[in-house]
Amino acid sequence: MANATQDGTTAVSAGTKTAERKVRRPRSTVRDQRDVLRVLGVLKVATATQIMDLVRPHLSDNKPIRNALLVLQADSKVVSEGSTAGPQGKFGAPDRVGEPSQKLWGLTPVGLDAAAGHLQRGPEAMGGRARGAGTGGAPHAMAVNAMIVAFTRGGRTPGAAAGIGGITSWRTEVPHPLTSSGKRNVRADAVFQAKDAGVPLLVVEVDRYTEPAHVLADKVGAYADYYRRQIHDPALPGSTVPRGAVTGGGPGTVPHWATVYPRTGLAGLPPLATVLTGAGPTALANRIRKVAVLSREHWAPERRTGYGYPYGRTDADGDFYLDFTGRIPLVMTTLDRLKQHGPLGPVCFRIDGHHCEEGAPLLQALEDVRTEAEFDQRLEQRRRAAKVEEQRREAEEKPAAR
Image 1 (cartoon, rainbow, N blue to C red):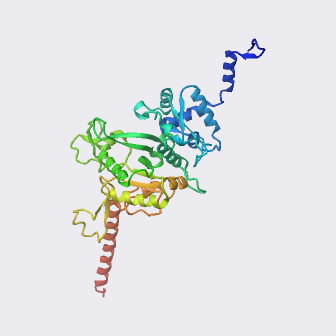
Image 2 (tube, rainbow, N blue to C red):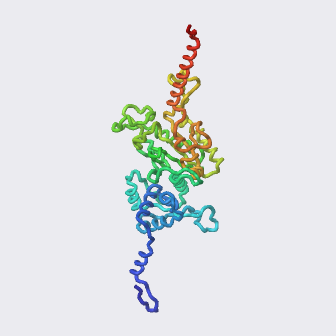
Image 3 (cartoon, rainbow, N blue to C red):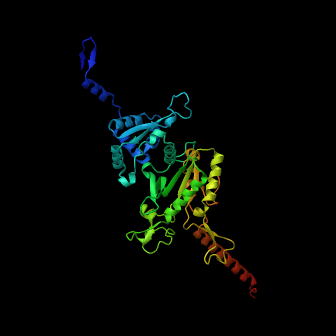
């Protein structure tokens, strides 16, 4: 209530101010708050619009998400530490160029625990909370978020294919230890798992064209090192180890990655996707070709002609199949193309020299081409054709019956 002062003015009591603050608290549903925590639990740092695109894509205004963020901020579960403009100035500054700046939001320790509960993930799967990432504008995180939004929402062009998976299909900043100490690891920008959509496991790297091509190629090599890492794990049945994954680890050993991602059903090594941005189409196309050349030893399949290699099958007739054993299925695309067409549109380039250059849908790009099974089928067809031809000749050579 208001009290009179000596000069005749009125003063507002502390209780009245508290009541006004409660009245002004933004209206937000429990569902909106829960979904905001789930998204930030995965992305670590994001804008209100990115959160909206992932959990409320039908909305054109992110106000419900902003209200949820403000309520969660009042509850000490989220914090805004910067904006997408970074240290170069916020929206409205005279020298500001580019897209309008947006606030960046992240989790507090309390919020991280709440997000883990909503995602039903343990601390080891949650990782950190990217403290302070927003102060610099988080350009890399923004590119990773844009990639995840494109995967989930699908293409923006008219008639584009829908997206696949959801926010719970993703983990970001996932370390893969190269040694038992864990001091050396290859850290994935994101890991995607949507087995019901045909992608049991996909490791994703986002490249912003800020480093030389050989650095990106070296990361492909780091994944190859990780996939070769063997550990002793007698509890894991040998039947669950993917074909071609064990590379001389010895009896009782299994690939480390197969214990981290069990029951994927993969026939070989986990595929790796690289999404490029930060330059024009020509520059990015050249970068894809250069990275492919520099990392060839890790993805290039062996050309084989059947049993008895290198001599091959005598009935192969110049035919061959590609052996991908121990090779990383590598697909590459650009962020712009992914935004336009979505992951199920013509976006991915399978780096094996046999997929069409204009791009293929992700699921098609992940399939091996010229497999041994197809090769054997072609051989059988040729055998049958040869047998039919032989029977025809024998029939022609027989003397006519009298």
